[in-house]
Amino acid sequence: MGSLCTAAGIDRAWLSDPDQQISGTVLKALWREALAQTGDPDLGLHIGEAFDLAAIGSVAWLASRLFRQFVRIYGIDLLRRLGREVDELLLVFETLANVVIGFIAVLAFAQSQSFNLIGLIASLGIGGIAVGLAAQKILEQLLSTIVLYLDRPFVPGEYIRLGDKQLCRVESIGLRSTKIRTAAKSTLIIVPNSNLVTGEIENVSRAKKVMVMLYMDFLRPLAEEDAALVKQVVTKSTDSLFGIDPGSTSINFTQTGDGNGNGNGRFRASRARVTFFILGSNDNSIELRKRLLELANSNISKQLKSYGIEFTMQDPTVYVESPVTL
Image (tube, rainbow, N blue to C red; front, side, top):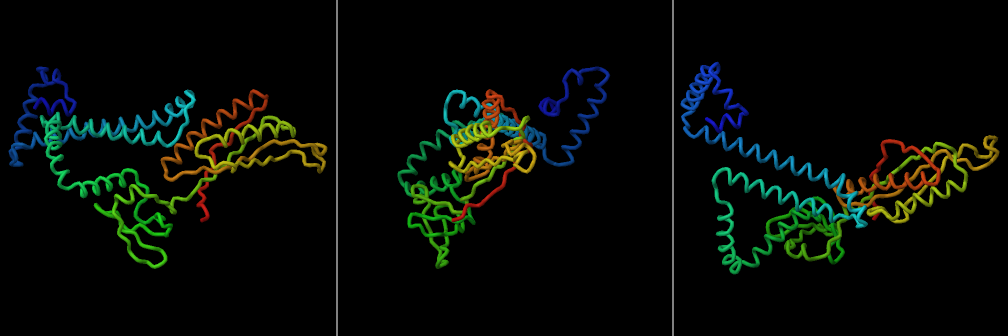
């Protein structure tokens, strides 16, 4: 009963209050009656296990989300301050951290149930050596399958090119092999997963890029020299950013005087539209590049402000997904 009270958040001091003893006695009687009606004397134990599993799972999920937010908000900025290049290795580190959190959660649940999981893993490790010597090839295929599911270089339904550059569509990923269908002859090819892990694969379906459009509204009209300085700072910042298509940055200025009577024909820019392309293979890598772009925008603002050029950025930033022409 004490464990159930703890799981339900009931204070023991509240139950020991003389004014609450009658209510507590009634609750105990009702609880015993409910257990008797079910005919399962271990029902209370099962409910306690369910509470433990739900609590440990919730804590693990919360820890994973908090770690992800910490990496996305503070980790990227910290690496840039240290002068390190930010790339997709950060996503790999995030995945490894989630695996560690999940493993700790499993150990915690096993410990709460007085189950010696570490001893079981050690005993399986000894037996695994003997099995591995007898079935090394099978284990290699299974491990390759696990790598494919974790790394996800392709998923069923996507088009890929293998070493022979033949265009194929992924039909399914099995425990030992992957079935792919050729686009030209529509024949089915069965490829061992170990070959796919070690071989070169070109994923055609993920050949996409995201066009980014930024609008900069200047607090004062810019002369031609200031506009050239803005173009130089923005181009340098975006081209040096990880995941940006090099040379794709384009800047167009909107003038307040264009020679038709206003501004006496002088160049007077009040707004700039900046466009460039972000390259990425999945949603996580795209989100990482968007976070890097936010830091780059802050850096651009500081540099231009040091030259006496201030602007406001239109919110939100426009992202347009654009498939790559093959």
